[in-house]
Amino acid sequence: MSPTTTSGIDEKLLAVLRRLLGPAPIALVLGDARNLPETSEPIIATLRIPERSTLLSMALDPEVGFGDAYSTGRVEVDGDLVRTLESAYQSSGTRPWLWRMRSKWLTWSQANTRSGSARNIHHHYDLSNDFYRLWLDERMLYTCAYFPTPEASLEAAQEAKLEMVCRKLRLQPGETVVEVGCGWGALAIYMAQHYGVGVKAYNISHEQITYAREWARREGVSNQVEFIEDDYRTVKEKFDVFCSVGMLEHVGPDHYRELGQVIHRAIGDTGRGFLHYIGRNRPAPLSVWIRKHIFPGGYPPTIRESMEVLEPQSFSVLDIENLRMHYAKTLEHWLARFDAAFENVVRERGVEFARMWRLYLAGSVAAFRSGRLQLFQVLFAGKDSRFMPWTREDLYTPFDQEISDQAWTRATY
Figure (cartoon, rainbow, N blue to C red):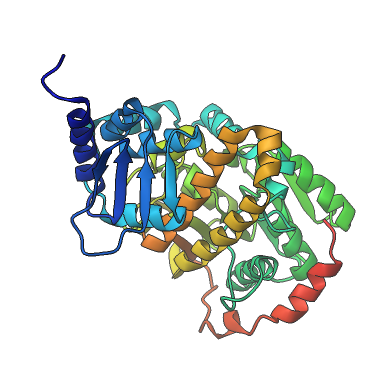
């Protein structure tokens, strides 16, 4: 028999986990062993770990160990999951060596080459349209909404986001737009219907492109909008406007200059463009657990890092806005809808998949609330462009939420 008792081993492992977790007001419990934080704040949650092997995996790498254990039901959180994760994000310190090794391996194995990007995008976006329809808005927008008021519905906020993108670009009838990473097609169709532009939209998700083409046909805009199932690197034509909403996170820093060359090839020195992307205040890899299970190849850049797309081509940055709290609220809506559909997800995909996605959405809410993640919108133009908005006044003409909500009760998609 080891001189260290079973309870003593558990207490030592809990102490290791506590050092990595920091002073977050979360109780750690395994059997009779209990570890409380050294803080005067009230305990907001209790993490119940049923077995030593799970505790050991969490002590070696809290993020991946907890994520995998929560997904499989080997860990339970007594308390609000989002608040628990937010508190952990705010207090945790140095990453353990195992996390750093895993992070480097994923950065290499999930590189966003043409073939790598196809694999990465297929893993996340081709799960099925029916799955995403359970918890997204009716337009199937899977990017940050814009809430004119905190009380706006998700549908109204997503429509306001589409309108805001178009306003920032000051689209004019007859102009041509290239959109890369177009999702299920909502922005391209909105641009055509409300601003009279022609759009070519690129995406490598087969499920999304198929959905978008059918939607455009039903809406009668197939002559204005072309959805192309191909990589953004294949864009060759000339356009007035470049637009990317929610794709830069999938490009990777090694390909930023390449993306800049694609943009310059498309709009030259006289066009204008827009980047909307999840970012950070300081350089850091995306969560290993999220890259492992949810978003392979993902990387949220800082503003400085993202300038590697624009500066080599002498693009002028005209406006930068951070909508971090708008994304937190968007995710709160998604999480609430996901939880309402949880049993449907379990029936279709299994309980492990459902718990994994619940954790991903809850963790994303916490990341934006705590400031771990940001949401940047960058408006830019070619060095010879005459496009230089004098003020922002036209962007913030009030959005009529009531009319928008009424319209959505009549819409079908």
